[in-house]
Length: 144
Image (tube, rainbow, N blue to C red; front, side, top):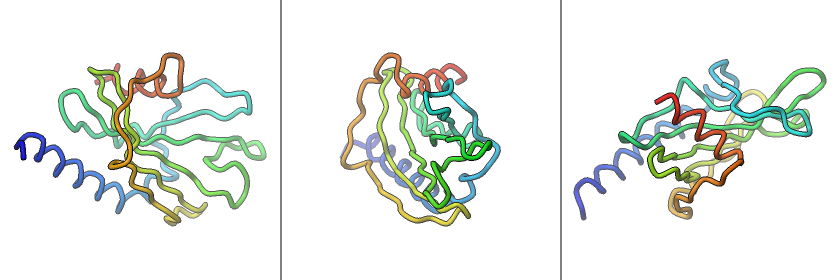
């Protein structure tokens, strides 16, 4: 196996394991920053700016979630009892590509309900213009 590719896979696996084990602390943190305008339903998308991980000189790992207004407050849930969904993205700033790596769901108290590793089943794709993906790309790649 090619050594740089093997090293990258081992590093990525270690980061995914860390994210899997520590994701609960990130559910309700104040380190989340909006990267879109309000959508038609009043929701917006945010990313965890404190936990962006640089995998290489051009590639970042970043958590994203949708925040929805509920009874005058903004929350990551659509209604009481609905899980908080977070997605871990690998974004290549140079190639302008994104790949979904992990999807996690938490209850309102931050307890992990499910975790789906999509790393093996998805490939990096070009980020579509004027999309949520492009907004996330601009938010994290322009600052690094």
